[in-house]
Image 1 (cartoon, rainbow, N blue to C red):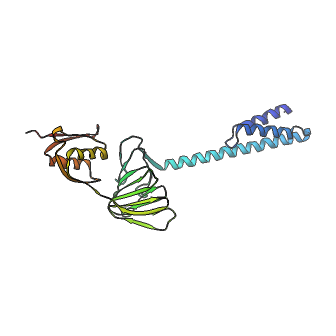
Image 2 (cartoon, rainbow, N blue to C red):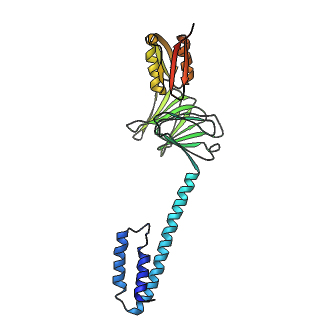
Image 3 (cartoon, rainbow, N blue to C red):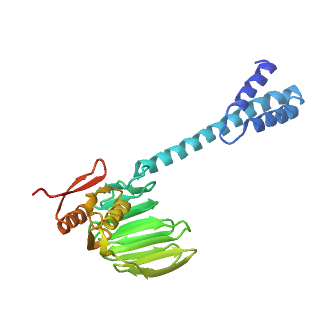
Length: 284
């Protein structure tokens, strides 16, 4: 092979894309290589040509192999995780393989392993409410940033505030809280919330129920609209009707609606598709 052909072949190999070398660096490296190599005697040229080609081929092969291995590892991790996202502006209700219920708030995401029945460990991004099925042999865990909530069967919510405080509110059962890097455990009872902010933790109480004492019916229906994202319609003449009711904050919407209808002697229809509740006067 002629010297010019050997030089062309080497430059073609040298110029091939490589994951670890930017194009402008490869060109500069080639100029440096040719300056040092092609000025030497012909005897040494041939040896260095083929040596350089062999080295380049090895480097390129190693780079491709590393890239392939990284891609395979990432794909393997993705294949073994189930990912549920809520890109909508409404609450997304999800049933997990163990029959636990998760209500994902807008823009929230939950991941869990394929063998979830035997490994009930989830990772949450965003805000969600959990209603966990009881299983004493397989604790349910939720990882959120560097905190872990462990439960056997309960109802609780997890969220992060605009000031980056992580808040876990317990409605039913018991949960154990852990923080990465700490040997302490915190146990919550219903009506207590765990707050973690700036590496500090504390527990405080919160109201499990929303009380309406002799309030206009419109105030109660506004509460339903704000907390359940349903449009609620009532007969105009009843909007000022006084209402006394105690609502468990995580009660089912159907139950609350039925109680309100009973109090005011009304009929009602719930349209889940259109997210609408319509109360009407009972026909005589």
